[in-house]
Each structure stands twice: as structure tokens, then as C-alpha cells.
Length: 478
Ligand SMILES: Cc1cc2nc3c(=O)[nH]c(=O)nc-3n(C[C@H](O)[C@H](O)[C@H](O)COP(=O)(O)OP(=O)(O)OC[C@H]3O[C@@H](n4cnc5c(N)ncnc54)[C@H](O)[C@@H]3O)c2cc1C
Ligand SMILES: Cc1cc2nc3c(=O)[nH]c(=O)nc-3n(C[C@H](O)[C@H](O)[C@H](O)COP(=O)(O)O)c2cc1C
Image (tube, rainbow, N blue to C red; front, side):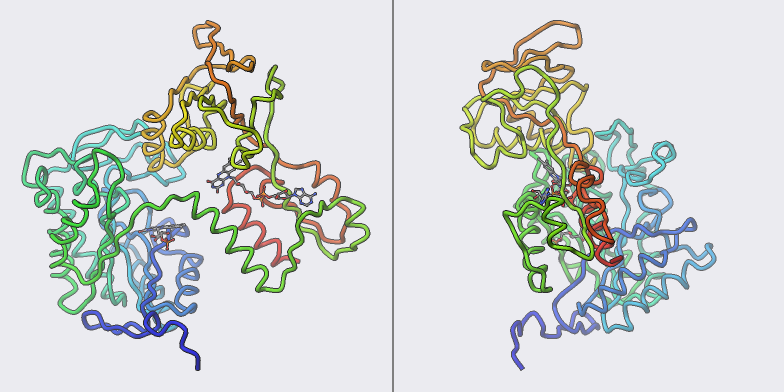
């Protein structure tokens, strides 16, 4: 037999556990959580699928260890009927396919309630962290008292013990991604003056106490994995050197370290397209480019089914001058079809406008950003937004409350909140005013096959995840 990846596929022993290879499935958001905090059937099936796929361990994501954390609703609590049995079923669903069931223990600190759909209710929760402060979305949080810290440390141990009882054979302690333990590790969030703040060692104290508490509960030989952000990538946060020091301080208390750095996600996005193309070709799909699907083409081809994934087109409102030579659509700027001058004004402060402005700023251009609303990148996720805004404010001049009235070769004439008319001067204008669905294509092709489905942006402008999800299910439905 050809052994393509002999090392990756070699079994490994960590503590008292044998893993069948070296591929570990990382935790991914348990979204199907029931009202009583138990794992729902969809989440369980998701983890089971991963185990069946052949990896060595599958980690169930973010189990809240303490009631002060309302972020994700997954809990393990003996007072809840079914809580322990359902965890057992999940561990078994992973184990019976030969993978080691692991579970991630977490507390989100100041981000408690972030992902709850009922935002009013989530803001009614108490949010706790190392310090007193206010989150980027305006939600205040309070510093944990020593008594509460002790209670949370004990809760980590207690929950780890329950996980072991339920059949999990390892645990992961989450100290990354901005959650509570990360908030204590971070000089950006932790300004405590007691033994939990200040030096790197002091900021590691809570994580060490948690790891000791977990070890006491699960005993020796039971692998404990630690998830740590390698660096925080913001000036007030810890850098890679300190990340390495933190890892060394915590090393004696753990068996596996999962460290991460933030990847430039646009590059990943690009690679995703390449990967999907390859997978589609391997599955036997013939990819034809340079061919517009019109009614005539479809009628001649006579398909049994059409999935219309025609995407969206950029919105270009009837603002005078927006069709000028110096205007480039945000979707087209990477094509370099038109020269981009050293001074640029990005028109529109949604996520794509903000990302484009940052990109232009990183290229060394002078960038102005014009946005009619009071703030920018309002749709970005709460943990990404501060990073985006920090970069934006460093690299660009941002004008909020500016309504674009007219585009000229010298820039954009805007009306300020106070009603004043001002020119934001720049020679290239990047139009980032939104997208609209290609309903025209959907309307043209709706009766060109016995089975037709419109998916993705052609249906409603959204994200890659949504388009992929709808495409997958459309294909299954044919
Ligand atoms: C600037 C910008 C940045 C973005 N960043 C992100 C991001 O970071 N993350 C994220 O998740 N989403 C992002 N999005 C959104 C994301 O690009 C879309 O949600 C996603 O591409 C939608 O996929 P889709 O397959 O529906 O359409 P598209 O990806 O738009 O693909 C539609 C394709 O159909 C082709 N087509 C149209 N009509 C026909 C026809 N008649 N015959 C043949 N072919 C046709 C088009 O040429 C196009 O190639 C961004 C969007 C923009 C504009
Ligand atoms: C949909 C989704 C949900 C995730 N949920 C969690 C989570 O609950 N806990 C966690 O620690 N990481 C979570 N992650 C991060 C992943 O575990 C992983 O670290 C990340 O995707 C980077 O790994 P990759 O480079 O192999 O994709 C999630 C990632 C995705 C894409």
C-alpha cells in the first residue's frame, strides 16, 4: 500500500491515551444547543461525522463551566435532567468511530451573551472580566472579585470531572480567542493590581489555577490540551515573544498546546475558491468559463436542473459623477484595469469599504473614507471590529456622518451632519456602496429546466458560508 503521509498517520500516545493518527478536529461552534443547555441532535451528528471522517480526536466546542457565562448555552449540570446522559451519548457517538472524544472548557468573561440571538436578554447578563470596562459594542463589564475567581477555578475542575464521567477522554482548556482566560493573560484587558495582574507570571495565575483544578479532577494521564492565542496582534496586547513566554509558563500543567495566529483571512478566502474548484473537478464536474448562461443557451443545452448562482452586482446609486473615469468599483479594484492614484477616497464604510480602505492604506496610499452613517463596519463581528477599526484609524482619515452628493475628478462633495457642504479631496474614488442580487438572471432562467433553484447572492446578498450552504442543499434536493 502506498503510504503517502506516514508521519501524519502514525499513532501517538499522550498521557494514557493512544491516538490513531495525528489529526485533531478542532472545536467548532455548537449551535444546536437545547433550552436546558444540552447538546442537540444536529451538533451531536456534526461531531460524529468528524469522528467517522477518521481523525484522531474530536473536540466538542465551548462548554460553559460557570453560570456567570451566558455566551454559548452549552452546560453540563447534574441538576439538569438529561445533562450527563446527553454528554455521554455525544462522547459515545465520537468514540464508536475510533476517535478520542474531547471537550472544550470555556468561560467567555466580558463576551458573555455575545452570540445570543436575544440581544436584549444578553445585555441583561452580568459580564465579567479581569477589569472594569466597556466592550466595543457599549456593554459594560466588571472585574471579577477574588471570591468569584476561586468559584470559577473550582467550576473548571468540577466540570472537567463531569466530562470524564460522561466518557470524554481528554479536555481542552480555552485560553485563546479573547475569552476569560485570555482576558487575564492580556495586558490590554488586564490592569489588575493584585496577584492576578501586572507581570506575565501574574497574568498567567488564573490559567495555572484553572489547569491545576482540572488536573486534580481528571487525575494523571488524562490529556489536557490548552488553546492559546500565539499573539494578540494589537499594540496593547501581548506579542509573539510574550506568547512564547506564556506558553513556557503554562507548559508544566498541560499535555498538548494548540497555539494559533490570526491568518490573513482574505488569502484563505482566495484559497477556498481554488479548493472548491479542485473538489468539484474531482467529483466529475466539468467547469466551463467564458460562457454566459442565457435563455437561448439553456434552451439549447436542455438541462434537467439549474442552480442559479449568478451572484450580485455592485450598487451604483444615481449620484452625479459616480460613472466618471476616476471611479472604480470595490469589486474591480484588484483587477487594476484603471490606474489607482496615490490618493484615494473610499465611498462607503461597510465591511468591504473598510477592508478596501485598509488595503489601500497598507499599499502606502493616502486614503479618505466617507460614510453617511455615524459609524463604520457596523456589520462586522464584535471581536473583529476593534482590529479593523484600529487599522483603519491608523491608515486612513475617516469621515462619518458625511453624505456623498457628487463625485468630481477632485474628490467627493459631501454634506456633513451640520448641513455644511465640503469636498473630500482625492483623485481616485472607490465605490463601495453595497451589492444587489442578480434577480435579472433568475428571472430570465426561471423556466429553463424542470427543476430550478436560486441560491447565494442571486437570491439575497450574503456571505460565502450562506451561498455554499444553500448550494450544497440545492444539489442534494435535485
Ligand atoms: C468587496 C467584497 C468583499 C467581500 N468579502 C467577503 C468576506 O470576507 N467573506 C464573505 O463570506 N463574503 C464576502 N463577500 C460576499 C461574497 O463575495 C458573496 O456572498 C459570495 O461570493 C456569493 O456567492 P455566489 O456564488 O452567490 O455569487 P458570486 O460569488 O458573486 O458568483 C456569481 C458568479 O456567477 C457568474 N454569472 C452571473 N450571471 C451569469 C450567467 N448568466 N451565466 C454564467 N455565469 C454568470 C458571475 O460572473 C460570478 O462569477 C464580499 C463581497 C464583496 C463585494
Ligand atoms: C464555524 C466555526 C466555529 C468555531 N467555533 C469554535 C469554538 O467554539 N471554539 C474554538 O476554540 N474554536 C472555534 N473555531 C475555531 C476552530 O477551532 C479553528 O481553530 C479555526 O477554524 C482555525 O483552524 P483552521 O486553520 O484549521 O481552519 C471555530 C471555527 C469555525 C470556522
